[in-house]
Length: 415
Ligand SMILES: Cc1ncc(COP(=O)(O)O)c(C=O)c1O
Picture 1 (tube, rainbow, N blue to C red):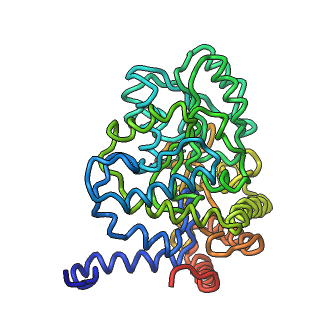
Picture 2 (picture 1 turned 30 degrees about the horizontal axis):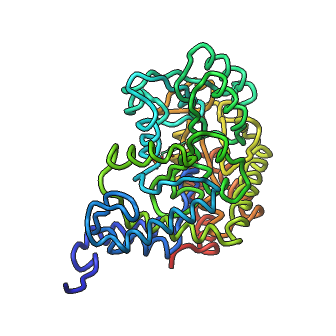
Picture 3 (picture 1 turned 60 degrees about the vertical axis):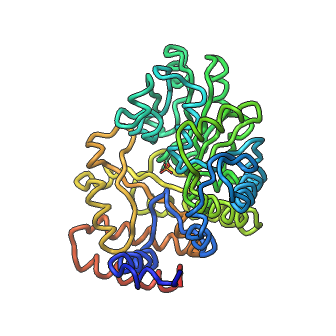
């Protein structure tokens, strides 16, 4: 086969790919679920393994020619076990959502009951939202954070669980800035005879590095995305005790997926190897330190943080007090114009709507990958404040855009 580049074959896509590389290099990725993988992970993900069908699991495949797929998947599994201390690992879920689907399919029947956090309080679509298959398949009840404190209302969770009698309780969130008391939730699950699924999609890297509590060995099932704080190949992962292995594996394949995306599994294996290096622990700690610095500086500028701070990689800003006339979408748009890419987000007790919410969510995994420390992150907080205060002022935005250019030139990303 002659070797042709994307540019040779398809200039339109080549242009978009080059533009995306430039966009990532030239802006600050502060969407809390995003990160930048290494060139090694990128290389693994674009390997010839994309061509291979490897239905089944290492050593037990339905097709011939799987020896290299076996090697790669087994490495990913072994490294994941070491990273998170799990007895059994499935690295085939195509995404965090597919990982959750695998768990539900393994232990629930249609119509069974899920108790999970409300989306507007930080939960995820795949935890039972009406627009998601979970909301259409299962009977869903939700718990909340305490709107005064911003922390999970563990007493409310218990009361709801006792009334609702769920089959599974889901912990782990998309927009919750605090550590999670997995043991407390497990106690509730034990008392109401429910399974406990801890979805650590956002915090996989922090948990692996020991800078966030781990649900492994506490919750029955732990799921995650593999491309967020753990910074490996794109996809999902399920962890559980050995006793559930024969429920989980068939629920992923053939239960809810076909052939695994082996190129992504290779990306997971490479990213997990990187995460086993001592530098990753320092990275994860810096992610948390930077989020704290970001939050504290924003508070100094008068912003109000849900829960008054953060223990993890993100801050959730409630704009209603400091900027009552500014919506999250307006802030998001103005910030994107200057090169700070984050997202508008609902806040507990939301008074606007999911499409035009009152908050913004900002994460530090991407900045930290670029080498940002606390002083540099405080600078970013200063710029966020200037832009949100002056979101209609083109000259302020032009000045800030120049400062972002200087920062992205200093903290380089992809060559
Ligand atoms: C808590 C939680 N679970 C699951 C997911 C879904 O992950 P994916 O986008 O990989 O399907 C997310 C995504 O951000 C999440 O925040």
